[in-house]
Image 1 (cartoon, rainbow, N blue to C red):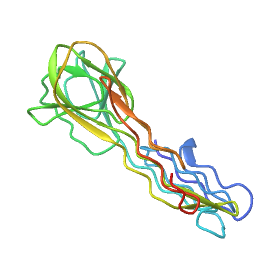
Image 2: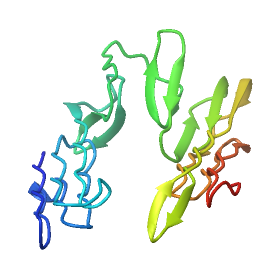
Image 3: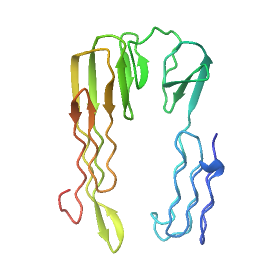
Length: 219
């Protein structure tokens, strides 16, 4: 499942990552690449370089935990729940709780957890929230953060102002019906860009603004 990182070189291309998921090694002005996330793979090695940005090394990938069981219906909670070939599969890309004392949730969508009183559906990417019946819910909508600003000095990019945090809105005691609701999760801003807006049930939060650039010009 995991692949080792490729080695860095002083000249020529860096080594390829193992199993096509490890990070590729860097060389001269070409930085090493990060491995595929949630595979436990190694980062690519750094090559010979004049600055950390040139030929720099990369970080390792975070791990992953996957559980499955054969069943005609869901029998547990935790992680991202999918089905395949008669199995229920729970995928944890981050630390969490796998709970076998299961009472059916009243909706599908996102990573579903419970604190024993509330059902919690967490969306870290866009998707669909579908209640099986009318219900009353609270929901939090957080937008993507803006990127830092940058200054172009002789062809080299230097980071300047910090990016703004994504906006957030919190709604309580909202009535929802048995239908599919689209969930849009705003992405973080790429270099020099604002963050993306997040939306649920026609309620949106605006993305954070990019940082200032070009010697203090406002972003």
